[in-house]
Amino acid sequence: QVQLKESGPGLVKPSETLSLTCSVSGGSIGSDRVYWSWIRQPPGKGLEWIGYIYHRGSTKYNASLQSRVTISSDPSKNQFSLKLTSMTAADAAVYYCAREAGTSPFYVWFDSWGQGTLVNVSS
Amino acid sequence: SSELTQDPALSVALGQTVRLTCRGDSLKTFHATWYQQKPGQAPVGVIYDTDKRPSGIPDRFSGSTSGNTASLTVTGTQAEDEADYYCSSRDRTGNDVIFGGGTKLTVL
Image 1 (cartoon, rainbow over the protein chains, first blue to last red):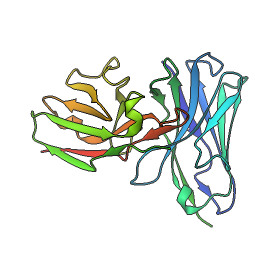
Image 2: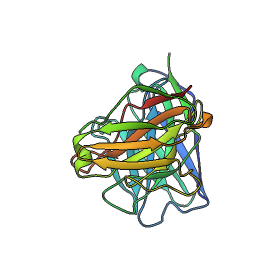
Image 3: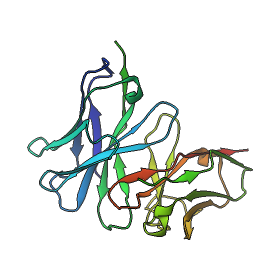
């Protein structure tokens, strides 16, 4: 059973960069056909996919966030990370990391999620 | 990217059947996934690839699709089914992942 756990600061200042890490256990982030995503949820609102990293470091980002997002991985630590620049109050959210087993191009299936970490944005 | 539209809230009497819907152009091409989220918890998948249930999900949860609308049906709703439900698919281009706005299901 794959387990994921987010870590990082709970408070970021406006205009600064958010850095979060997802630690994976029970599975390898180097596995083929597995995509490692970041998803966020503002308080009281819905889910928003941020992007993913997969096989040998290829990435794909939500078009609306692409200019501010970087997802990277550290296979030696079995971790992947999120950087989101120019943070504003609108970026305050619970940030989840999740695994998608890319078994089909016709659907997306996040079968494992971290517990989520709340990030506030305030000076 | 395209959108997925869900009813913001629904209610159902204990033991009755309720259908949650998710509409979007992308669903003509891509298959829906449904997630259940209880307060303070991460989402849990209840249906993937339109109508498949992962292990551990009760068979009272079922999925279907027609045209641009995907449905999640809960038959014999239990008190523990009270939660927010989100649908998801790829967008029309197949590049991005999109979520519906969510349906808050209340069990009376």
